[in-house]
Image: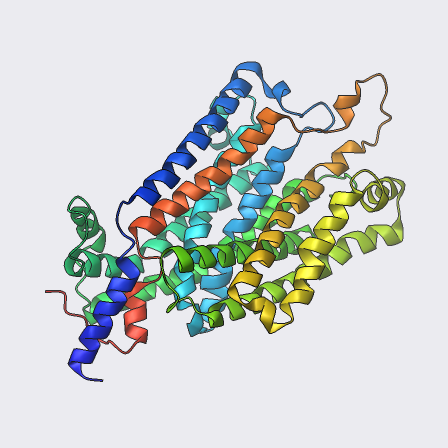
Length: 442
């Protein structure tokens, strides 16, 4: 390859991966829709703040409703950064290069919002600071706050460090960049010039972060599982909840990445970079982690079903054949078993089919968290006497539903802003993989 070919290839890569960095009508319309939707949800939250948690379906028996299901889901989706960047990245899978930043963006967005989700379940959110001021090591809630914060910081650094080289390229090489953005990119580039010593420092820092990310990510969902498992409630009293939650997190995160890949590929015209091969391989990843998750799902019900204590019997009866049975079987069959069977065939691992499968998996993943959180609270150990029906049987309200939707809108806003003003696919790494070893920054 000649120098001119290198130059043309680099110019094409730069143009392809940065042409979306601009403010257009589509972006403004989308952000306007998200902003209005968020304001509606925040109004619902203001009603809850004014009138109390009674405006939600939460009562004396079911004290954790959709808010806690939402929290577990958001923590789950954030773990995809660890799976893609750390676990698969450290073993040298080069095909992951166009996907790593998408995974890290999703991880940062969900981890950033996960901490806010828990606030929606607090009657006195102004007392959140007490967790840090008066937190006790005996409380899993303190551990949860600590590991979520740590994981978010690590994920944010892992998102930023590979961008340093990209920022240097963009602010020097992209002529169509809005003038007000150039100082921002220059500051974020940290005077990067592609010097070997700079690359060595950045690569070493990234590798350290990847290694640290693995225990942090495992801790975040293991500790979340302990919020349930340390109780003696039927349905929660389980020693497998740690790996069970982690494997389920990989399923939800993989589905989220595939959905993002599809929309970035189409909207930003990245067909040359997010190819059918990437969707095929991500389909294999999704099938693999789903099989692991299926094993833990079987384990979750087989062990208590074998022992069949009275409380477990009531809980399993409601899940398998009671009022929660329809949701349970749709989630298990439509969100886990059928996707695994479909993904065994290559034609279902193409962009459009795998998009539809991933949407089904992600929706089912949320309802799976609902089934983990809600039904077991509706079967208290003590007899239920002289209480209203709605104190025992949980039914979400409109206000509660709007507040539950708000974190999803925040995640979409964060992902939209990051993907709109930064390359979705690593620019510097892609250029290197195409054979461009040295990039002139003058």
